[in-house]
Length: 271
Length: 316
Ligand SMILES: Nc1ncnc2c1ncn2[C@@H]1O[C@H](COP(=O)(O)OP(=O)(O)O)[C@@H](O)[C@H]1O
Ligand SMILES: [Mg+2]
Image (tube, rainbow over all chains, first blue to last red; front, top):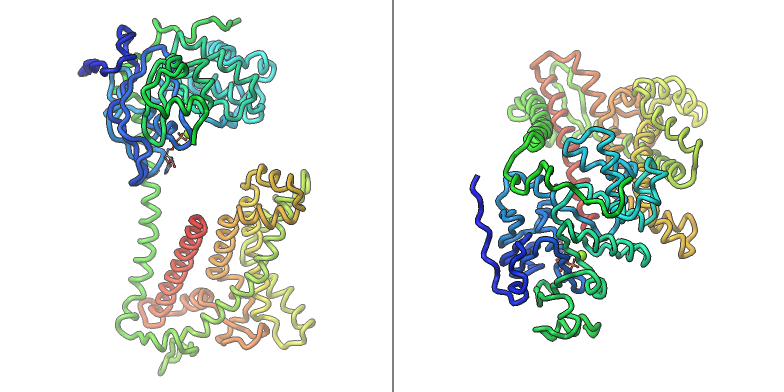
């Protein structure tokens, strides 16, 4: 097998500051189209190992499309075309023989919680089972660990056999996160996870994410700019299919921006 | 007991190094295999349809090209294929028979099955609901010859008594029988379509103060209309293709009906009744297969337009 040489780092000021950390994800000239309409134009960025990378921007900025392209979920959407290169762990995701192997390494949390119509236990045990783990004792450990990490264990430990789809919204979203963690992902992508979740649960999930940072790389798409500020090491601002700005999160919020539109959006003076 | 600080995974023993995106494992090959198998199943459906069409056409096509007079065939009501000197092959009366019976059957079945489906899906609860569903499915499983029997033995004398007519085997009889026969399966499909409408739609509408009927009429029925239409078209197809019950309940007389009390004869019943006595490969035999081609084409057109209608609804 040919080992693809790790790509040269992009000439980006904020990147040179921490040049020693390897890149988890390299995106080059990514353009996403639906039919003839471009949803995302010529985006280049890189995401480092073990950082939380925030993406902020108003609706229809292309944030969800960006996540879909990384995971190769574009095949589920007819008419969606992806141009450019996405390198994950040094591999070009457009040229993989086994895209299922790629997806199994990337956990995704969608905006609306998806408790699959099976028990809480089976929800979390699904991915381990898919990769061939059958032993009950081993599964028990994984289920408990993932539910604990997702701050849900205490609430469901007495009803692991209840239907996952019958939990409350906030619980289902944590179940979704537990399920994503059960994949033992290298990369966790969250798409506006707090849309259908109460503030207390949101805070609990944010704490979970802070802890996870040590083990996984996280892409956090959020419609709450303050959430990006609380969590993200670096943040990108998407607007109307354009990646307007990428920078250290704190810089974006203290006004050290290259583009006036970023400041306006962050300060809530938009449109 | 695991704690929050426990490592997410043990990277040292991780069996899946990040570089194995190129390794096609057993799961990957199994996936391809299944894709191949279901592809063959899907394609074979097409092959079966083509095969049947080919067979039916082969038997009937000789007549179509050599002797058939399209005007006579489609536009005259005279059907006397066994006349040795001057056989006549006009299917207008047979078409009228099929159309009148199917039409009346839909008049009976559509409101009936829609009402039943609305009751089962929206009003009945618990045991009633379950019992009704089982009963409806049971009704759907009654063989058509039993329905024909009911038409012959029960409906016939009843119609004669009520309407004071000489024969009770007529459009009305067959239409009712066929309607009752198609209703259970239509009810079942319509009920599925209604149940597939998410409860949050009902809740959202009910929260605005809409009455139960308003919720059904304004929200649930429009949301379910694709499935409902599908059920109706399946019913039309059933009526159109039904043979045995129609043979027994129509009176089987070649006739363009003036009223619902006239006896008629259906296209399908004609094939069933006459194919046995027709000489294989002879003209009569070929004409019967030509009717088969005709039925095939009409069914195709009904299905195609149904598909287009449903697509139109989806877009709109
Ligand atoms: N399945 C789709 N078909 C056609 N256009 C789409 C589809 N999904 C998204 N789009 C368009 O792409 C643009 C970006 O959408 P999206 O990636 O969902 O943005 P965001 O997540 O930032 O709100 C929007 O203009 C949207 O209308
Ligand atoms: Mg989105």
